[in-house]
Image 1 (cartoon, rainbow, N blue to C red):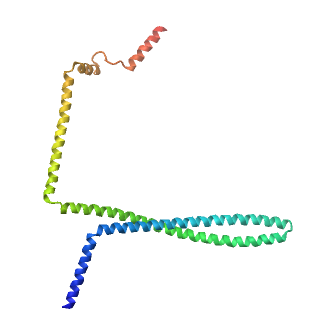
Image 2: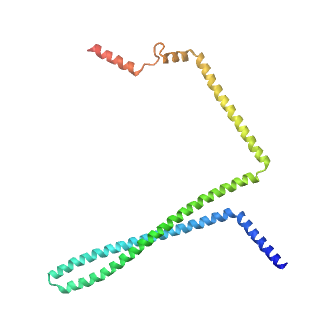
Image 3: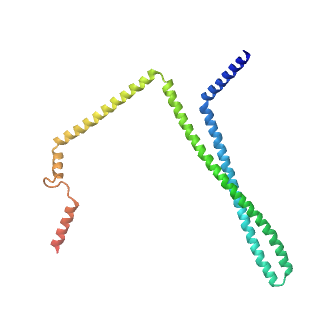
Length: 228
C-alpha cells in the first residue's frame, strides 16, 4: 500500500510538472530563445576577436619578412666590404627573426583553421536561432488562435457574425450610392447642351471646339508658303 501511495505521489508530481510546463511554455520558450540569442552573439564576438588576432599575426609575419629581407641585403653588402663581423651579426639576427616568422606563420595557420570552424559553427547556430524565432512566432499565433476559439463565449462569436453582416450591408449601400451618383452625372450630361456639343465635336461632327497643334502647324506652313 505504501509503495502504491509513493507511486501515486510521483505520478501526481509528474502531472503537475507537465501541466506547469505546458501552461508556461510560451514564456519559457521566449526566455530560451533570448538566452540562445545571447549565446550566438557571444560566439560571433569570439569569432571577431579571433579574426582580429589572426590579422595581427599576419601583419606581424609581414613585418618580420620585410626586416629579414632588409638584413639580408645589408649582410650581403657587409660581406662585399669584407665586414665579416657585421655580416655575422646580421646573420644571427636573421636566424632569430626567421624563427619568429616561422612561429608567427604557424600561429596564423592554426588561427585560420580554427576561425573557419568557428564561422561554420556560428552560421549553423544563426540558422537554428532563426528557425527557433520563426517557431516561436508560429507558436504564439497558434496559442492566440486557440484562446480565441476556446475562450470566447458563444455570444461574442455571434457578435462577430452580426458585425460581418453589418459590414456587408454597409458596403452594399455604399456601392449603391456610388452607382446612383454616376447615373445622376450621366443624366445631367445628357440634358446639358454644352456637354452634347462637346461629345459631338469629339466624335468629329462639326468644327472642333479646341484647336489642335497639327492645325496650328498647318496654318503656319501655309503662311510661310504664301510669304514666299
